[in-house]
Structure formats: C-alpha cells, structure tokens
Image (cartoon, rainbow, N blue to C red; front, top):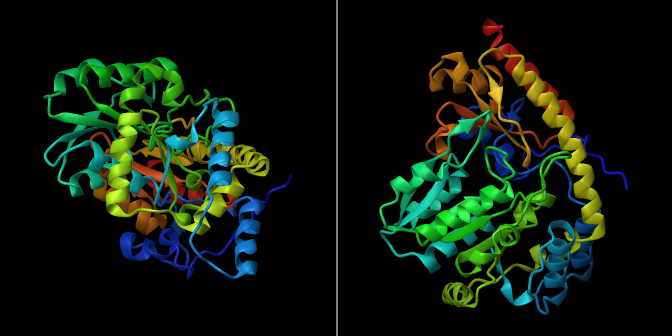
Length: 393
C-alpha cells in the first residue's frame, strides 16, 4: 500500500488547535509560521478510517452506539498482534482521551491532598490534571546519562514521604523519546511496590517506535507480578492521528481496581462517542498496521534530517528518538537565557514549539518540536533555526 506523507494539507482556518492558536499563544504569525507544538500529525489517517466515517455520513443517522464487540475485538487483536499482550474484553474502559483517563484515575485511586509521583520532565497535562484535582505533584527529576534519560530509583526512594499514592508513568517517554527496557520497567514496578503506589502506565505512544529501536514492552508483559496495582492507558488517537475523536482506553486487569474505576465512570456518566468508536475499529486493522509501518519509516527520515540540522548548530543538541514524533532539543549549550532562546525560535525562526519548563523539573533549557509533518516543512524548520542562531556558527 502507498501512503502519501509528503502531501501538504492546509490546516489553517479549520479549527485546528495546533495551527489556529499558535499566533495567539506564541506570537508566531499564522500566515507563514510553522506549528510544531501540539502533538498531532499533519497527515491523513489510514483510508479505512475515512471510509468508516463516510459510511456513517451516508447512513445519515447519528444515534447512540450499541454492541461494541467489534470495537473490543479490534483492540484485543491489535494488542496481541503488535504488542504480544492478551487483553480480556472486560478489562477495557473507553474514556474521552487519555488526559481524561488520567483524571479519572486520579479521582478513582487518590484523595484530595495525596501526592502523585511523576518522573520529570514528562507530558505537561499530567501535572495540570493532578493539581486541578487538589492533589500534589511529587516530581522526581530524571538524570541524563549518555544523552538520554535514566531512572534513578535510589535518589527517588529518599524523596518519598509516605503521602504518595500513585505514579503516572510515561512509556514510551514523552518528551524524551525513550523506549524503556524490561529491566527498567521491572525497576518501576519494584519502586511502586516499595512505596505502595498504584501505577498508571500511559502507553499512548507505544506504536510509534522507530526502525532499529528497542521493542516497546507493555508494563503488563514486563512486570506481570504488579497487576494488582497496575492500570494501563492506550489509544488509537496518537497512533493514527485521530486525536479529535477524543477516545482512549483505560485497561485494568485487576478486578478490585476495575471496580473502583467503573464506579467513577458510572458516577460521572461517561460514555464514548460513536464517531470515535467507528474510527478506532477501522484503524486497528491490517490496513492500519501497514499505515503505521509506512508512517514510522517516513518519520525516521524526518528524524534524521531534523537531528542532523540541530547537530550543526553550536550549543544545541537533540535527544536521540527511539519513539514518538516529538524531538526534545536542549539549548543549554548556547549559554542564553530561556527568554532569548524562545524569542529566537518564535520571532526569528517563526516556529511554535512547546516550552520545556511546562514539562516539570529538568525541562528548563529545552524545547519540544513536533516533526510529524511533511518533510519539506521539517527541512524548512531546520533552515530557519540555522538562520535564527547563525551568530553561533
């Protein structure tokens, strides 16, 4: 199958958060700015997803969704075929995306005033949701060794106070792009057991692993002995660029944990939208698998071009990506204050990128760039960054 990832699709004026809000939020001009912040892609999803929506439109009635057996079977097939993970249908809850899923986990498994552990820097929505729920964030900063993040359990053991009730863990890691090893995942499990933490493993990027990178292991596969304290989160939305469906899966193998989560879902009256269910069912298919394989080959080319361009600018370095399409770039070698770095990127290069401090401790000198866009735009971004920092070269 051939998929065209080079096609430039105009998204301005389409209610795209990524493109239509960058001027207001970053001061990057809408007419010629490059939106490299929000984590959605500038590619169409697999054709089967569009066909599924077309069938709904042709039918013309948009009622409540019933009989989700095909949807559940599609999830189970995908997890088994792509990740070696057998999932029972009764384990699966469908939420309005995984930020919503995170909030539901915080609500179900902690109390106001409890602390929730994050290994930072990490996806910024976690801390936002935790704090909004009246819980505290316990930040455990990850050290960088040989250019990539590592887990420092000895240091973090000393930080724990006994008030922590949950760990939200990002696997693969966003923004660092790490695929954690089996040994590291077992270390996370042991850390959680030592401190009596429920682990919420956000694995939304699990399909977005590069050719030649280590294989992603679901936490359930790497550490099956902590199922009594483990909640898994997955989604089609990041994999297939259908984030607007607002659909995620919270998968809970343990019966007691499952009952607590089900109670919160029922109390809040949460049920999924039919459009998302049809899209996800179509995406988790052999055609969807072929599309993901082609996507990752294409993104591998983007990754190489972007990393090479960053490496040519003195003082800048990008963390090697094993997974995700989010390049994490360190500007500390420039010696510039954060305000000057962002001014050069936003005003001179006219690029909107996520600010590192929003990801927590350890993100202060970094910016996150979304490279899931046609290659011509990646090449243009590299050219603009070279010009913006030309005085260093």
